[in-house]
Image 1 (cartoon, rainbow, N blue to C red):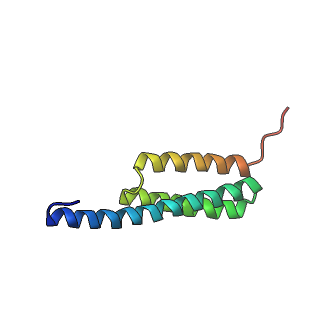
Image 2 (cartoon, rainbow, N blue to C red):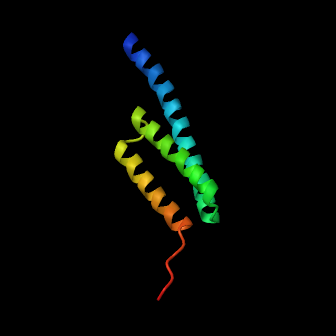
Image 3 (cartoon, rainbow, N blue to C red):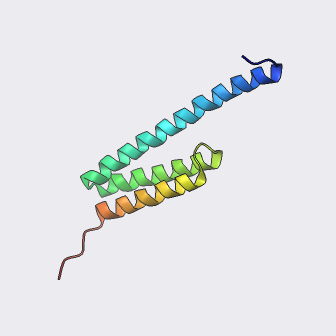
Length: 94
């Protein structure tokens, strides 16, 4: 239990911020699943659109401090690699 007025305010603001961050993280997870399904199915157009929106969402989340910048960069890099592997045909063996 908070003992001061400022501590009471901090409890309220922390709860609001926690709910907002949870919502953003859930959205990131949903977009990630949508991208994985599209990339796994080999649907290049849908995967490309999903990747663009996912990268944008990670950038916004990193900018506001919901996820750390390094985490966002690592996820974006790995997702881009996954996209390239799923959509670019493998070179023919000689």
